[in-house]
Length: 257
Ligand SMILES: O=C(O)CCC(=O)C(=O)O
Ligand SMILES: [Fe+2]
Image (cartoon, rainbow, N blue to C red; front, side):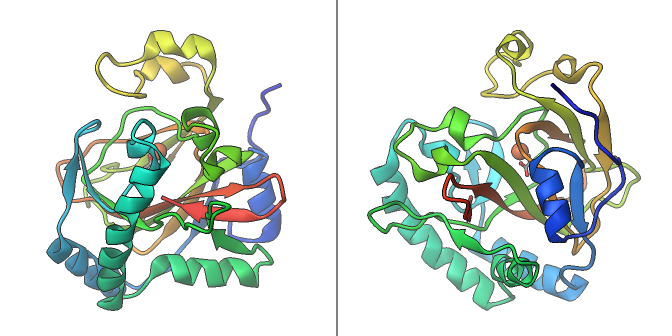
């Protein structure tokens, strides 16, 4: 049965809240000032020089692979492409800092060990992508529901979205993140936006509890990506570094992008 959140306010990072987020008892965790403004500027600058590409299926400006882009092409095509993007990413973070590595260390301090997602054959996933001026309508991100079962990320039982905000619109409510207390159900397909893969109209969350979160530059936000969520459009620049976290049947947590 769907429960309502215990709070709609932001919760700090600790093990109790991590579990509460996983159990969908709270809507999000905020880590304020995870990075300084200067660090965010340096990373944005390095990303800008490395360049973004436009992802065809969603008209998204992106740095680094997304697992979802390879759901049809398959795992071997993914891991082949991942090699080059890992090198490109390494070059970028060397010029600034690696937020994902910092987060893994922080999570470990909170007794929440995290490992890069890895196939049984030993290939590791790409993690730590960036999205520029991306304002997706309502959607959910769920590797178990959307990926073929031979991908190890398809075995996670919950999925969290991790975002570091490098640039944010200054206008009030520009680029805010909305999260609804509702997960995908088969009857939602009637609300799909035509020709937009996996994106839904506002009707999909009608009547559902919702929070609207204002991210600040340097903040990390964590939310349950199996809940419907969307980003409020803005004409100003918005840039995030993003990854997903998921728990495996073995009880370990993995990350990927
Ligand atoms: O950019 C954001 O605030 C969230 C974007 C999103 O859809 C996600 O992280 O899954
Ligand atoms: Fe998402």
